Length: 112
Length: 114
Image 1 (cartoon, rainbow over the protein chains, first blue to last red):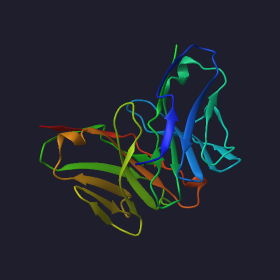
Image 2 (cartoon, helix red, strand yellow):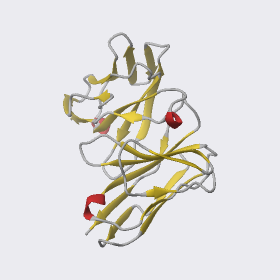
Image 3 (tube, rainbow over the protein chains, first blue to last red):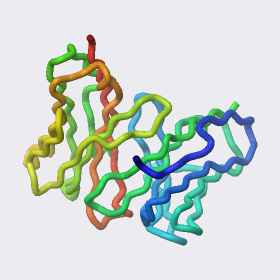
């Protein structure tokens, strides 16, 4: 059983609001990722981190930001939510190259 | 550009028969390949993986085949069960690049009919 948790599972929020999606893992993995996924589409990498104080933007342009102050915690923040941000957000962690990535249950975000 | 492609958006099979899901990739630096299963509103769960030094890996009902020369991999599920109905994603990574990120295909919706 993977020990990676995302909260909230579902969120409906109004346009212009600031939101933070939480992601925590207890496996001590250095590498963490945020993906965005819409139905019928691939998972798009939006942010990743090699370790504490290291964050990089992924392949898909995103207006979100991330931080990595502690190994176990990798929150994603949207300063001003818009309807175009409506999607499923998936957090993952991975111990190394030749290993699986463990995913959280995801956050389904709806911006109205 | 799409480095990992799953050209079949959907596949329907009868219970007990074999399911074959296909995946193609373009990046020759990829050296590790994975298959994930995903239900709506949940995160992907890992099924099976294979490194580029192998051409086959088997785990119970699941077998993954890798053809490096064709840049193609496939997932075989036999026998298929109704509980296997889900979206299956192929993913690939390259050692030492960009945080060992996983690059995903678009997914194939598998439906196993009783």
